[in-house]
Image (tube, rainbow, N blue to C red; front, side):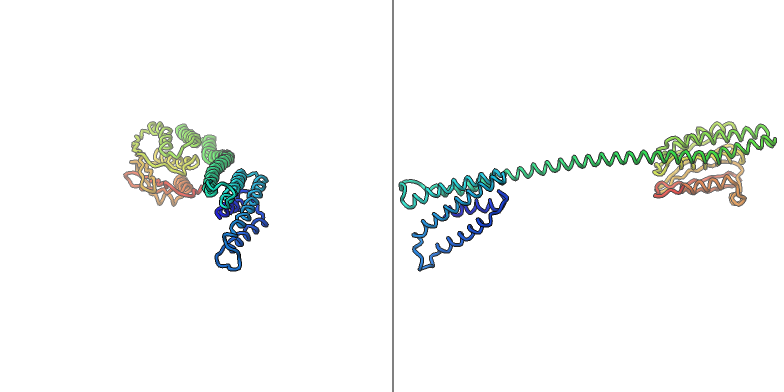
Amino acid sequence: MRAYFHWHLIENAHRKSLHQRSLIWLDRSVVLLKIGVALITLPVHTLLPNVYVLSPLAYIVLLFMGVTVGVAGFFQSQRAHTQDGKLLSAWCLMGMVFWLYDWLLQNNHTGIEGIYIGPYTNAVAFLLFLYIMFRRYVGAINEVIQVNANLEQRLQARENQLEHIHREQRDIAHQQTLAAERQRIMQDMHDGLGSTLRTTLLAVEKDQLDSCSTADLLKDCIDDLKLTIDAMEPVQADLLLVLATLRYRLEPRLEGAGIGLRWEIQNIPELEWFDPRNSLHILRILQEAFTNIIKHTQASEIRVATSHDTDWIVVTITDNGQGFDVAQGLKKGGKGLKNQLSRAEAIGATISWDSSSEGTCLILRLSIKRDVITL
């Protein structure tokens, strides 16, 4: 009966996965034969011949079915091009030869000194199954490695494609930014420098300005032009660089006016929202403060300082001039103070003045981080 288990094992393996084809007639025949052999070999049927009489017949039927399963499995595996199926089918047929030899030995058709070799076929079949499982396991691992490599290549290609698209979009955005920046600078020069030059020209034509006043206005125009050009340079979120540029541009005028400069700048965090447009707003605010001090306060010293906390950077400009009434200055509609307020509002900053007879302090508070910048 061990031959029965041998080809039954081989048959199940073929039917399930090896040749990837199902023979319904063979499946049903094998099932019926299993049931029939099991029933006729039960020791409960008194009408049937003795089991020892039926055993040789049962062996012959099982051997025939084993050969049928082996041959059918081999041809199906050949059609499916599966080496594993052909290997098991060949061993199934070889096992039938061994079991036929055992049957002949059991029925005294060969020498009685021989040994039964059929039981070893199950061990070899088990080893074949282990080999097939191991080979398929290694093949599955290699397939996974290959799939991962293909996925990695596809992912890299997709990343390269996205990088290319991002680079194109960045170039387009850069061109749009440059165009908008040119438009902004033209508008700023028209409203600022152009307006000052026109006013100066009309005053000179009508002899309303002396040479000193004309020179001061022209100096203001030159400073305004220089600051506009400086604002076009990359600022890289560095407010200290902007303050240093302002100092470089205005210090000669302060020296010419006899005003000392105390520079008390400390390291401050970077502003993530800082760009040339916002840089120009800050430069204009501080330039207006210096211009007001030079023209109106009769100060002898200006102190520029920075500080910061978790959320804000604070820039203060303090002078020791005669001071002014802040409320009255805003109420009269002075363009200087109102321009400073509007520019501070445009960049999400706050500005305030503290003035007395001992001097004036301008306080500019800049948010370190914010999501939206109103321009």
